[in-house]
Image 1 (tube, rainbow, N blue to C red):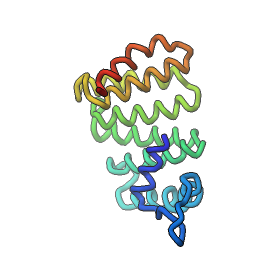
Image 2 (image 1 turned 180 degrees about the horizontal axis):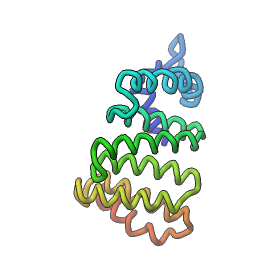
Image 3 (image 1 turned 90 degrees about the vertical axis):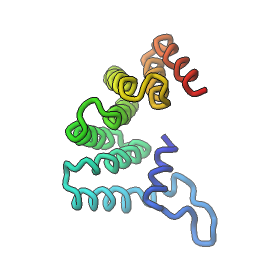
Length: 173
């Protein structure tokens, strides 16, 4: 999850250091810049420019949800993930790879909320879409297989996730 937040920080071009060149710790960057720049400005500007249902709004909504998730505001992250997913499904159809990635993002939030059953259902749907559209050996398929293994482990069923984890490891080689 940390790499997602670091990506978001790069996308919105947050300064990487303090005056004098000393680095800013990752958590301090989030605390300082998250509410002012990302939440209040980036999404609001894009929503105003594009409209509340524009397909290009789904990605910044998802990125904001990742920041909120990292910050511990999983209820708000869930709401934004659901909104982004609804926009993508409407614009792209239910079988598009971008929809599969949106399903995975929402599943991660649900996993953080402890709703492992719902997370697993979304991950299984995401896996089916990605295998159909990208093929069973694609790295995105491997990532979803790992997510499914994690969810199964958190449900107390690590053996159910083991075959998927091994398949993901094989794909990654």
